[in-house]
Image (tube, rainbow, N blue to C red; front, side):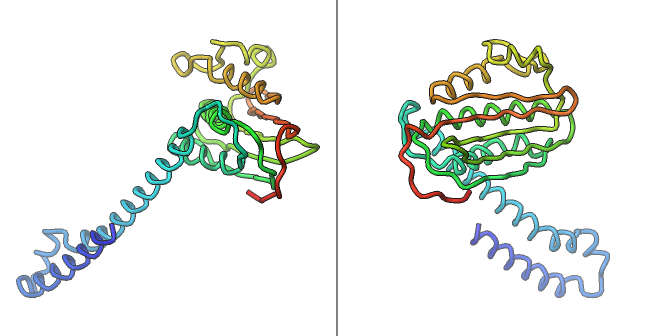
Length: 229
Protein backbone atom coordinates (compact mmCIF):
# COMPACT_ATOMS: atom_id res chain seq x y z
CA UNK A 1 0.00 0.00 0.00
CA UNK A 2 2.93 2.38 0.61
CA UNK A 3 4.15 1.99 -2.98
CA UNK A 4 0.62 2.43 -4.34
CA UNK A 5 0.25 5.69 -2.43
CA UNK A 6 3.55 7.01 -3.79
CA UNK A 7 2.59 6.02 -7.36
CA UNK A 8 -0.74 7.83 -7.04
CA UNK A 9 0.99 10.95 -5.77
CA UNK A 10 3.29 10.93 -8.81
CA UNK A 11 0.35 10.34 -11.18
CA UNK A 12 -1.60 13.22 -9.65
CA UNK A 13 1.41 15.49 -10.04
CA UNK A 14 1.73 14.40 -13.66
CA UNK A 15 -1.97 15.05 -14.28
CA UNK A 16 -1.58 18.59 -12.92
CA UNK A 17 1.40 19.25 -15.20
CA UNK A 18 -0.43 17.83 -18.24
CA UNK A 19 -3.54 19.83 -17.46
CA UNK A 20 -1.60 23.08 -17.29
CA UNK A 21 0.10 22.26 -20.59
CA UNK A 22 -2.96 21.10 -22.51
CA UNK A 23 -5.94 22.92 -21.00
CA UNK A 24 -4.54 26.20 -19.77
CA UNK A 25 -7.36 28.70 -19.70
CA UNK A 26 -9.98 25.98 -20.33
CA UNK A 27 -11.53 25.20 -16.91
CA UNK A 28 -14.52 23.49 -18.63
CA UNK A 29 -12.18 20.67 -19.68
CA UNK A 30 -11.11 20.18 -16.07
CA UNK A 31 -14.75 20.04 -15.00
CA UNK A 32 -15.65 17.65 -17.84
CA UNK A 33 -13.03 15.12 -16.74
CA UNK A 34 -13.78 15.70 -13.04
CA UNK A 35 -10.11 16.31 -12.34
CA UNK A 36 -10.67 18.25 -9.11
CA UNK A 37 -12.98 15.54 -7.76
CA UNK A 38 -10.47 12.77 -8.56
CA UNK A 39 -7.54 14.68 -7.07
CA UNK A 40 -9.51 15.31 -3.88
CA UNK A 41 -11.08 11.85 -3.57
CA UNK A 42 -8.18 9.56 -4.47
CA UNK A 43 -6.07 10.05 -1.29
CA UNK A 44 -9.15 9.45 0.87
CA UNK A 45 -9.98 6.28 -1.06
CA UNK A 46 -6.40 5.06 -0.62
CA UNK A 47 -6.61 5.70 3.13
CA UNK A 48 -9.90 3.79 3.37
CA UNK A 49 -8.31 0.90 1.46
CA UNK A 50 -5.32 0.93 3.82
CA UNK A 51 -7.65 0.92 6.85
CA UNK A 52 -9.59 -1.98 5.36
CA UNK A 53 -6.43 -3.99 4.78
CA UNK A 54 -5.34 -3.39 8.39
CA UNK A 55 -8.77 -4.53 9.67
CA UNK A 56 -8.56 -7.69 7.55
CA UNK A 57 -5.07 -8.41 8.90
CA UNK A 58 -6.34 -8.01 12.47
CA UNK A 59 -9.33 -10.31 11.85
CA UNK A 60 -7.15 -12.98 10.22
CA UNK A 61 -4.63 -12.77 13.09
CA UNK A 62 -7.41 -13.12 15.67
CA UNK A 63 -9.01 -16.01 13.79
CA UNK A 64 -5.67 -17.82 13.72
CA UNK A 65 -5.28 -17.26 17.45
CA UNK A 66 -8.85 -18.43 18.02
CA UNK A 67 -8.50 -21.67 16.06
CA UNK A 68 -4.83 -22.69 16.11
CA UNK A 69 -4.79 -24.86 19.25
CA UNK A 70 -6.64 -28.00 20.13
CA UNK A 71 -9.94 -27.04 21.77
CA UNK A 72 -9.29 -29.27 24.79
CA UNK A 73 -5.82 -27.81 25.47
CA UNK A 74 -5.62 -25.85 28.70
CA UNK A 75 -3.26 -22.90 28.87
CA UNK A 76 -2.77 -19.85 31.06
CA UNK A 77 -4.75 -17.21 29.21
CA UNK A 78 -5.46 -13.50 29.35
CA UNK A 79 -9.27 -13.33 29.26
CA UNK A 80 -9.24 -9.62 28.39
CA UNK A 81 -7.09 -10.37 25.35
CA UNK A 82 -9.47 -13.19 24.41
CA UNK A 83 -12.45 -10.81 24.66
CA UNK A 84 -10.70 -8.18 22.53
CA UNK A 85 -9.87 -10.77 19.86
CA UNK A 86 -13.49 -11.96 19.69
CA UNK A 87 -14.77 -8.37 19.52
CA UNK A 88 -12.50 -7.78 16.53
CA UNK A 89 -13.81 -10.91 14.83
CA UNK A 90 -17.51 -10.04 15.27
CA UNK A 91 -17.09 -6.29 14.77
CA UNK A 92 -18.44 -6.34 11.20
CA UNK A 93 -21.66 -7.98 12.34
CA UNK A 94 -22.22 -5.63 15.28
CA UNK A 95 -20.90 -2.22 14.22
CA UNK A 96 -23.97 -1.16 12.24
CA UNK A 97 -26.38 -2.12 15.05
CA UNK A 98 -24.67 -1.25 18.30
CA UNK A 99 -22.06 0.89 20.00
CA UNK A 100 -19.61 -1.33 21.88
CA UNK A 101 -18.59 -0.24 25.36
CA UNK A 102 -15.67 -1.94 27.12
CA UNK A 103 -15.03 -2.11 30.86
CA UNK A 104 -12.12 -4.50 31.32
CA UNK A 105 -10.74 -4.88 34.84
CA UNK A 106 -7.32 -6.14 35.98
CA UNK A 107 -7.36 -9.95 35.77
CA UNK A 108 -4.95 -12.71 36.74
CA UNK A 109 -4.33 -15.21 33.97
CA UNK A 110 -6.67 -18.16 33.97
CA UNK A 111 -5.87 -21.82 33.32
CA UNK A 112 -8.56 -22.68 30.78
CA UNK A 113 -9.36 -23.74 27.23
CA UNK A 114 -9.23 -20.29 25.59
CA UNK A 115 -10.71 -21.46 22.28
CA UNK A 116 -13.75 -22.85 24.09
CA UNK A 117 -14.28 -19.70 26.16
CA UNK A 118 -13.78 -17.65 23.01
CA UNK A 119 -16.61 -19.68 21.46
CA UNK A 120 -18.80 -18.78 24.46
CA UNK A 121 -18.05 -15.05 24.17
CA UNK A 122 -18.61 -15.09 20.40
CA UNK A 123 -21.96 -16.86 20.79
CA UNK A 124 -23.09 -14.36 23.42
CA UNK A 125 -22.05 -11.34 21.35
CA UNK A 126 -23.86 -12.63 18.28
CA UNK A 127 -26.95 -13.36 20.37
CA UNK A 128 -27.09 -9.90 21.96
CA UNK A 129 -26.53 -8.38 18.51
CA UNK A 130 -29.57 -10.25 17.20
CA UNK A 131 -31.60 -8.95 20.16
CA UNK A 132 -31.13 -5.35 18.98
CA UNK A 133 -33.61 -4.44 16.26
CA UNK A 134 -32.21 -1.13 15.06
CA UNK A 135 -29.60 0.72 17.12
CA UNK A 136 -28.44 0.04 20.65
CA UNK A 137 -25.51 -0.55 22.96
CA UNK A 138 -23.52 -3.62 23.96
CA UNK A 139 -21.40 -3.45 27.10
CA UNK A 140 -18.62 -5.97 27.73
CA UNK A 141 -17.13 -6.02 31.24
CA UNK A 142 -14.63 -8.16 33.10
CA UNK A 143 -13.54 -8.20 36.73
CA UNK A 144 -11.96 -10.41 39.39
CA UNK A 145 -13.60 -10.98 42.77
CA UNK A 146 -13.19 -13.56 45.53
CA UNK A 147 -11.17 -16.00 43.46
CA UNK A 148 -13.40 -15.86 40.42
CA UNK A 149 -13.26 -14.16 37.03
CA UNK A 150 -16.47 -12.51 35.82
CA UNK A 151 -17.31 -11.59 32.24
CA UNK A 152 -20.64 -9.88 31.55
CA UNK A 153 -22.14 -9.00 28.17
CA UNK A 154 -25.16 -6.69 28.24
CA UNK A 155 -27.42 -5.32 25.54
CA UNK A 156 -30.21 -2.78 25.21
CA UNK A 157 -32.25 -5.12 23.03
CA UNK A 158 -35.67 -6.71 23.24
CA UNK A 159 -35.01 -8.74 26.39
CA UNK A 160 -36.10 -12.25 27.36
CA UNK A 161 -39.12 -13.29 29.40
CA UNK A 162 -38.69 -15.13 32.71
CA UNK A 163 -40.22 -18.23 31.15
CA UNK A 164 -37.75 -18.16 28.25
CA UNK A 165 -34.81 -17.78 30.66
CA UNK A 166 -35.78 -21.07 32.34
CA UNK A 167 -35.37 -22.88 28.99
CA UNK A 168 -32.40 -20.97 27.62
CA UNK A 169 -29.84 -23.71 28.30
CA UNK A 170 -31.96 -26.38 26.59
CA UNK A 171 -30.70 -27.61 23.20
CA UNK A 172 -32.72 -26.30 20.21
CA UNK A 173 -34.55 -23.70 22.29
CA UNK A 174 -34.26 -20.20 20.83
CA UNK A 175 -35.93 -16.89 21.52
CA UNK A 176 -34.87 -15.53 18.12
CA UNK A 177 -37.04 -15.04 15.08
CA UNK A 178 -37.50 -18.01 12.76
CA UNK A 179 -34.39 -18.71 10.71
CA UNK A 180 -32.04 -16.68 12.92
CA UNK A 181 -30.64 -19.44 15.10
CA UNK A 182 -30.32 -23.17 15.74
CA UNK A 183 -30.92 -23.03 19.48
CA UNK A 184 -27.54 -24.71 20.12
CA UNK A 185 -25.25 -21.73 20.79
CA UNK A 186 -26.28 -21.02 24.37
CA UNK A 187 -26.71 -24.72 25.21
CA UNK A 188 -23.11 -25.37 24.11
CA UNK A 189 -21.96 -22.27 26.00
CA UNK A 190 -23.60 -23.52 29.19
CA UNK A 191 -21.80 -26.84 28.81
CA UNK A 192 -18.40 -25.21 28.20
CA UNK A 193 -18.76 -22.96 31.25
CA UNK A 194 -19.90 -25.92 33.39
CA UNK A 195 -16.85 -27.93 32.25
CA UNK A 196 -14.67 -25.07 33.48
CA UNK A 197 -16.29 -25.39 36.90
CA UNK A 198 -18.12 -22.13 36.37
CA UNK A 199 -21.65 -20.81 36.23
CA UNK A 200 -23.75 -18.98 33.67
CA UNK A 201 -26.11 -16.23 34.81
CA UNK A 202 -28.86 -14.50 32.85
CA UNK A 203 -30.75 -11.37 33.86
CA UNK A 204 -33.28 -9.81 31.54
CA UNK A 205 -36.30 -7.57 31.32
CA UNK A 206 -38.50 -7.65 28.23
CA UNK A 207 -38.17 -4.43 26.27
CA UNK A 208 -35.09 -3.26 28.18
CA UNK A 209 -32.33 -5.75 27.45
CA UNK A 210 -30.36 -8.63 28.91
CA UNK A 211 -27.12 -9.34 30.75
CA UNK A 212 -25.27 -12.64 30.38
CA UNK A 213 -22.56 -13.27 32.97
CA UNK A 214 -19.92 -16.00 32.83
CA UNK A 215 -18.25 -16.82 36.18
CA UNK A 216 -15.10 -18.98 36.17
CA UNK A 217 -13.30 -19.98 39.40
CA UNK A 218 -9.54 -19.51 39.69
CA UNK A 219 -9.00 -22.33 42.20
CA UNK A 220 -7.38 -24.65 39.62
CA UNK A 221 -5.36 -21.86 38.06
CA UNK A 222 -1.83 -20.74 38.76
CA UNK A 223 -2.08 -17.07 39.65
CA UNK A 224 0.50 -14.75 38.16
CA UNK A 225 0.84 -10.96 38.58
CA UNK A 226 -2.29 -9.06 37.53
CA UNK A 227 -2.36 -6.96 34.38
CA UNK A 228 -4.90 -4.42 33.26
CA UNK A 229 -6.92 -4.96 30.09
